[in-house]
Image 1: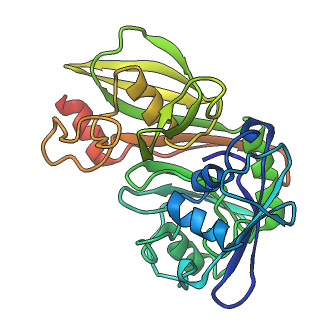
Image 2 (image 1 turned 180 degrees about the vertical axis):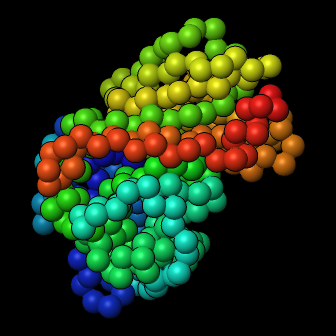
Image 3 (image 1 turned 45 degrees about the horizontal axis):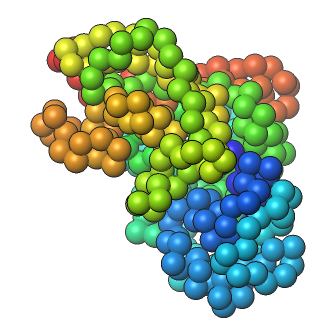
Length: 319
């Protein structure tokens, strides 16, 4: 997902949420239905088109057709009907907290945990746990479905995430994300041995034209610019243990870039083999190990490291 996403969300009644988004220069020329689908992944494109036909999407306060193409700084308002806004309840779920103060906290997200509620995932998410731990004191910029959430990682990806308790902290960190000044380094195991010890993968990422559930490297000027820096840490038998540093933060960026190069992440059924070559492996071997940013109040650079999960360590030794 783009670093510059939903910038405001308000409840219009007890069940309806209005989301306000801004289009940036990278999104100019993109269809409005495609733009919303890339930001609200729990909504299908056909459902978004239905909302548009019903007048639920305004661009600069005017109704548009699904074929409308965005201009830079267009202000998009999406009003979601009641069945898309479930009640989000606090849950007493233990959190692995790497750091916490009055403005933010950094957590080590476990495998199989969804970051925020969406269709089919209304409970047992990180947001449910945060609402309990923070007693509701979370940034409201991303709305009732995503309180405190500045960035995300996939359900099957583990590792470090920063959560904001105040709107001021959220705005500051969102600006750091947009300027690509936040350090984000991952660990992964790829299928196949990369021949280069270090490489930079670049290529615009957009919706896969053949499968709307997937992202893909698409030709210019389609998609959004994406850059991933890769370093091989260890060559394994038929696999590579690597570090990936993000220069940009697009949806599924590391998974898409590595698959495009012919080295999909081990255990990734969406961008690699449907059947994992390692029996009983659940989900992709991708871990957000390092997260660094400037504290929104002090300006001090802070860096946090989430240790590799046990299953990941054992897998490296096994391979």
